[in-house]
Length: 277
Image 1 (spheres, rainbow, N blue to C red):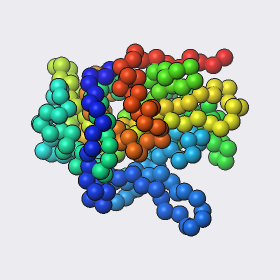
Image 2 (cartoon, rainbow, N blue to C red):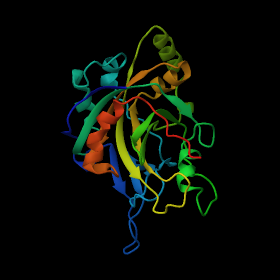
Image 3 (spheres, one colour):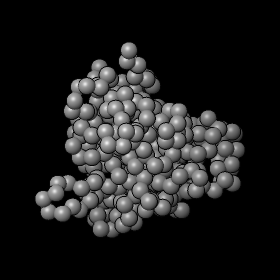
């Protein structure tokens, strides 16, 4: 459910000062582009979909992903329902963690479902394999190397489908059990706390028409800045949370028209992609 969306706005600080950045891995001269990376505190944290747009959609946690980006000064505003994302300077505060650029804020209401790689509901071993097949070298599906949350999907058009993911910076097993239980209790009394994420939209489509289910995959990925305990609690209790998404428009594998369409897509009813026969 889309609660509200503002227009694109300039946020962030000069890239060298940003705690979170998007970078291209440096390769030797003449060897082509390196991996597309999300970097936290100077360390590569996630590998993202490759630049070509024909490789499978991807977010993969790396060994150096060990940091969350919660802001203690924002905890009171985010404990409950955030009626207006501009209240209390939340957008500006989290924007100061990010590199300067254009961001599209969206305030969403999500009901997260925790997914483990290779198990029931895993996008990478389900919908992705149906389109791209198994990795030709490994003979295996892609692996996110982290549990993650699935929250929404809907039809874009006859040849494209949107999948939404919320990705924790560290696995839920790193969360403090007592804090998770506190959120479960408060959610049981009707509280709807707010998490914050920086987001990307990657539109990927295989170059070959050989797979049985060939279409464009729109992968909307929310990387959690704040709210790791809240998302785990919501998934465990089957309760909703709010998610303030800051879409990094300039870092997406999608054109400006696709990014501008996201608020309308997030306002649509949830719908699964029909199974090919």
